[in-house]
Length: 102
Image 1 (cartoon, one colour):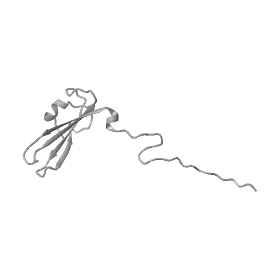
Image 2 (tube, one colour):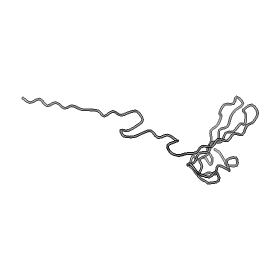
Image 3 (cartoon, helix red, strand yellow):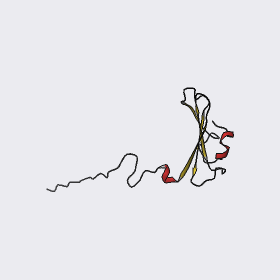
């Protein structure tokens, strides 16, 4: 009588990564992020622009992703909006105040 034994070995896999993958962080991608604040009174109307692009991109180039944070009177973020209603890298950082945000 023959007895056949199969042994299965599971490869270790960590949550969030497939075997052989490494996590990628913004600094590894070579991005530049610029923050701009427009202050107003007690927080109501305060605006923060966040402009992100590849490292070395001129602020006058149409290669920026721009978001806008608007604050309420309690100095809390009340809205987060994207320039041109998109998170694409197609905006000009220098024009942030005149862009349409949705």
